[in-house]
Amino acid sequence: MKKIFYFIIAMAVSSSNVMAFDNEPEEGLTWMGLFGMNISKLQNHPYNAKAGAMMGIRADYMLPSAHGAYVTAGLDWTMKGGKLSHEVIVGNDDEDATSKYNLHYLEIPIRAGFRYNVTDELGFYGEVGPYFAIGVGGRHKMSIDEDGPEVREMEDEFTYKAFRNYSFDPEKPNTATFQRWDAGISLRIGAEYENHYNLILGCDWGLADIYRDSYRDAYRTWAETTMGQDLRLSKVHNFNFSITLGYRF
Image (cartoon, rainbow, N blue to C red; front, side, top):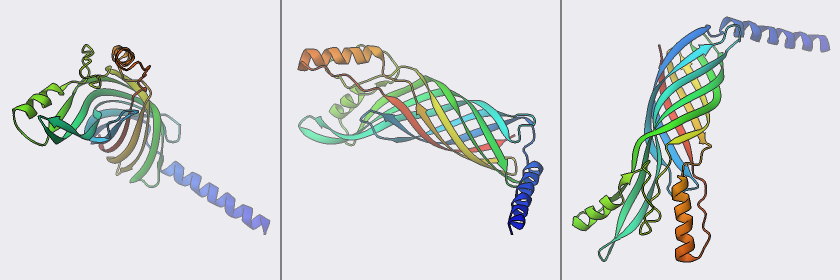
């Protein structure tokens, strides 16, 4: 009985090895265009998650005789940030408002991965590695549900460039701006059909504190002067979940 059992195990392993050999990805370099949606969040910040878009291009190099191992790098344009629904006082009235950080980054991911082809037409893969990003634009914008001169004036007052290093304003201590540089770890899992059509799910964990040192120091000084408290801002990191469609050329 043991011999039969071992024989069945040996045949199963042998068959799986043959299947893996038959369906191994082709070695060499390929390119993929990407377009998708982000759900991003500023961690340790009062703003909630918001949706955004991303697009980019990547190059995959399937390593020779590596049985599915590969490396990939790319260039992405991606929108991150956060939003908050709140109330503001306009004149003598409380009005509903929404404030958003729209942060636009150029991002370079570099990852290592492994791909397994179930059939000639269907393959699955996973990859992980660092990313490096620079903020190329974006702003903080407040939108108030009502209209009128006072409303528009307040909207303009709390609409500003998100990466610009403004002087600290004691009248608006919570109007934070961020440094341009970001870096972190990214994870992707995906499926490819007919060696062209891709569906990719991903997460990016930012490791850099994106608060500006000048803002952090000025906020601490303001808190000590006005309230007599040593208030230190928490480190703020980007977090992003993405759903992406890709086409391999």
